[in-house]
Amino acid sequence: MNTVLNLDSLRSCLEGILPAGLATCAPDGTPNVTYVSQLMYVDPEHVALSFQFFNKTRENILANPHATVLMMDPDTAARYRLSIRYLRTETAGPLFERMKATLAGIASHTGMAGVFRLRGADIYRVLAIEAVPGHSLPPPVARAPLLPALRRSVDALAGCRSLEHLIDTLAQCLERHFGITHQMLLMADATRPRLYIVASRGYASSGAGAEIPYGVGVIGVAAREQTPIRIIFPAAEYAYGRAIREQLEGGELADRLEASIPLPGLPDPSSQLAVPVRAGDRLMAVLYVESDQQYRFDYDMEDALVALCAMLGPCMCALQFEALEDDGTPAVPARPPPDAAAPPLRVRYFAQDGSIFLDDTYLIKGVAGSILWALLQDHQTLGRCEFSKRELRLDPRLRLPEVADNLDARLILLSRRLADREADLRIEKAGRGRIRLALARPVSLIAGGVQAA
Amino acid sequence: MTSPTVLTPALADFVTSHLSIHLAASDDRGFATLVRGLGCRRDPTAAGRLRMLVAAPQAEPVLRALATNGRIAVVFSEPESHRTVQLKGHDAHRVERDPDDTALLAPYIDTMVNRLATVGTPEAFVRALLHCPTEALCIVRFTPDEVFGQTPGPQAGQRLATGCALP
Image (tube, rainbow over all chains, first blue to last red; front, side, top):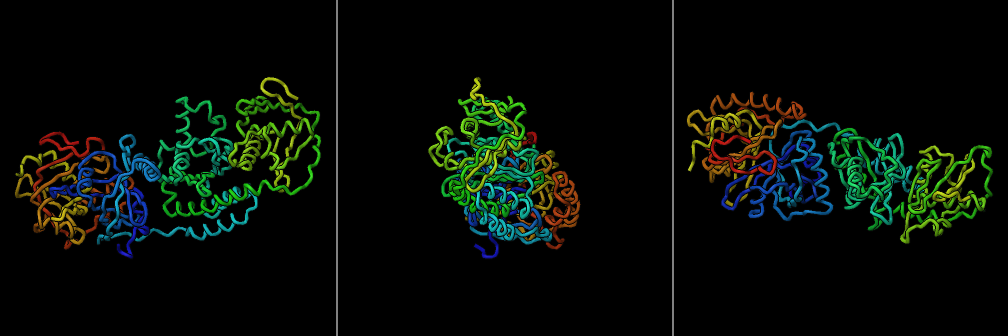
């Protein structure tokens, strides 16, 4: 392959912004030419073409694998011919899902939503790249380089000493160094195929605690396939809010998904990128960024955020265990609530699903609900207001899964959910490995329908 | 072999209405290649024949393949509507450019600027894409003997019977 021209430097031609031409040849020598909806970068030596319909192109490449693509740079109009050889078709898995999501964006961008349906991702080896002579425009003004932004972010993450610090630092870095204003971080639930929002920026409410099942929308597909999913045009079918609403209307998830906490997010994002955060083979989280601007996140941005998340995953994992280390500070007795005469906050708990209501308004359910209930019980019966994460990890009342569940992330989510609700009840940090329950008025605990204490 | 009736007046009107064009040819080893077309007009000397404008330096591999076997495929697409047809022929070859061919390029580019503006493509981009100095402009002439509907969708690729409505 030409050493100067390589696919890595031509990736903007492979974004699907402008259609490419494809020439194939039948066994009897008859040429065929067509437009391809999507030509996608796979790696420096391979591209994928969308296979949507059984047609002459399909028939030809199965009989004669050689083909030529004519593609153009969407900024400069420079053209390139790629000599390619068909290898195989993928009909499921990460590459297929990436192509399917990208195609959904292209379809709605070109008015073809409902017409395009991906049957497979045809993988081709690139044999040669030729620059076609002709006029072109000067390249666009280069934006701020991403490597320095990545380096500054990696340095900042390396200095974090708690999960909460890590999560906040990540959000700050994305905002300051990458100029990303709409973002959320979703933790993977260790026991069920779903993610829950632990932090977000750029929205009216953090949405902490809202859930997204695997496979739904850009975020859910990125989690299920453990691959980044990027769409550079509006793609209604991948808008997670809408996708989840549709699933709920189907009834399948209605009783099991945390649907009472509204998802934050742009109503109709023009660009979306979801990047899985892994530690080894384990999915820890998904980072999601979005924008009202089309083509806000390109291949280079995807590379930068994938690299950042490659560091984030192991950091999360390490800090999760460190969080259980107690600094041994003795617990202080509960302080009286500031306003003991105020009417008590009624906290109702349903053990069946761990749901908690504050003064009859829903707060949260699941593990986070059980944690809060246990803290409040100990506060009422033992007068405690400080707790170590280590003891919580071992507390059977919390019904934490056997596998390593990210207790720290659950506590962060709980504390942010309480802050979102402006509840008279907060969870605060109380030194290393410890948390504090802070009450602005007395509480009255009601288990199920019956008053407990 | 060739049927003068393939290029019906309606089809000729459509393909000469300044559409997005790609021409493909295949060499005797079965390798197909392609180039962007820069306009299309009816051949004044023979009914049922078309003259295609291409930029010779860009079209070099296509012209080489055409010189060996004359087999050609040309796809025409209306950017605003995605209405697309593909024509095929067996007698394609390069012919001398005449002043009417040269005169076609400017209106072709102007129309493409307007058509692509409707899908958000900037004028400067279209003019760079379609730019061709007069001396580089060359002509491929052929007689379409097959026509296929290629508007995106499950019907794409179906042969259109002579005289049937365009997709």
